[in-house]
Length: 170
Length: 135
Image (tube, rainbow over all chains, first blue to last red; front, top):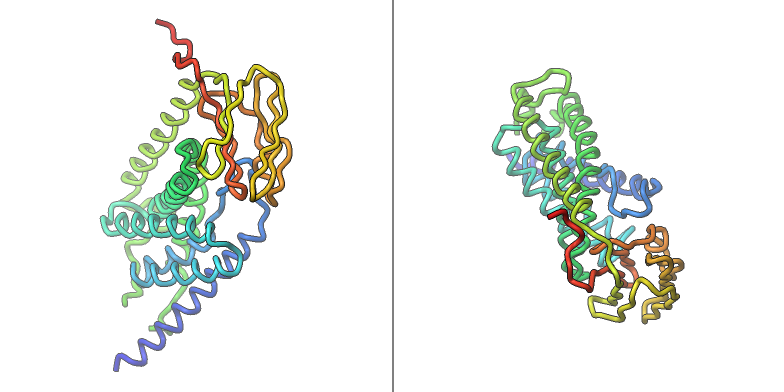
């Protein structure tokens, strides 16, 4: 009885991973906003992750996020970018999962917290890998841009969760 | 798997969580503001630059003498120029050139970082005295 729904779930998560991967590619094509501060991004793949977090739960979001990360690092990145992205993704998944669980904040704020913690994770890894604590100064700039992009993603994500029906996948 | 999402509100609906959201944002923005102001106010000008490659000290130069240094490593070359008390990377062999786009630095703790070549140029205040503070 459960088999059919499992296949549907698997298919749906695979589809989500593909869309997230496409969004990372779109983001990869966009020119950087500020050349002087690397790491400023919209975080488009997070749109899918936060959609899954609210629709199918934390485990689905983690699964798709990790698959997306692995494939996009192989396709457009290197071992270094994989380490940065992994730290960012793990921290933001933890923060978003916990904040959602408290049920105190709206999706927009959960997404903002996710964006900022994603940047924080990357900065922490950069400090470790380069052995240079001064990088932490970048965090101030990244916290501001992370808030803005997180807000954007959160608003779009709320629309997605409200409007997109996934009934036929259940 | 529930597809009901009554607890997700659209922005114009001002849900019950609106107040919590504002508190969260206020805390986040004040942390950023305090950190930013702290960095701006409490960093005086430095008087030397240190160059580290792959986390190890490579060289140190005073900022008051103009000079050009080629930082040659196994990964590539960065041309460091010290002029008018400021340090700047003018040319670099790395593909992105983020370090050569960086503005000149002269304040204590400021740094230019070239990730591909693992080169970090940091301004230091070797005199050890704190920036001028009205006492």
